Length: 105
Image (spheres, rainbow, N blue to C red):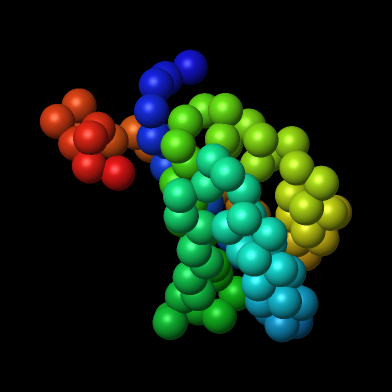
């Protein structure tokens, strides 16, 4: 595991007709996740070209913050049991700041 800030960028493609439910669940997930002590940023974006495509941008203080998020009851309820069944695809990626930018959170 690395040290310091970790960024997760996840693209989601929801099934046709599931967009409104996804928006509701993303809103609830955002509100709950933003309250986590290790969460620095939690933003959901929707594609202007494709209403079925969403991008989630998350930043955590460290790996422990990300793991706490993934282990939370709201993640299980809203993401695993709520959003994931609505999806055609999900592509998560993890990123770290470049060494000269680690102090610039």
